[in-house]
Length: 212
Image (cartoon, rainbow, N blue to C red; front, side):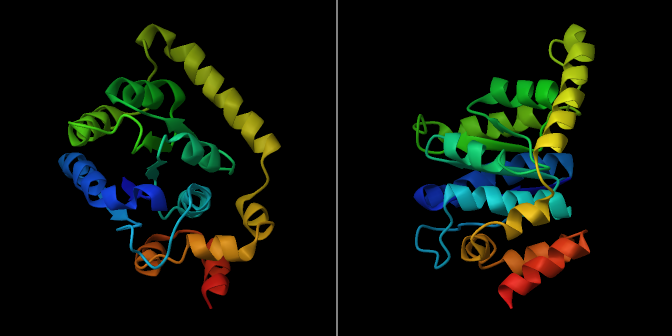
């Protein structure tokens, strides 16, 4: 699994802590973590939580990432932004039980965490334990297990509803302010990480046209 980490501007100073906690868990699973920044509050390319959603959607729909870890002060804005796009199912996750149940019940591909609210003493431990539970088992198995069949049925229904209601990703991206989208893919290491791992040529060509 290839996991992407994305931080917006208000919590960019915590990027290294979040990355280290995530990588510690990912390494035990043989997963790869790509850090898309922001890497510090002083980064020249500043991301808003709305741009977190744009970037996450590009990464997930192109196959450049299998999972996205992101957040903001409360995690709420980032969650709403990510869920505004097709191909993204993002949960609001605050602690290990949230992580486990979102993975098992909702079987999503992204989480948004609060990196300011409640982020105090032992915050790095909560991050590590949450990532452990999020990736502890194959997702979508149900919780509790006796609820697995109806939960899996509901997830399939949700997928159909989202497919009906949401436009394809390129239509979504092209309908936005192109400077907003360009800013979302303007990070220091974006090109190095994205183009190496992108599996969708049409999305890659669109992104290249933005950056040209």
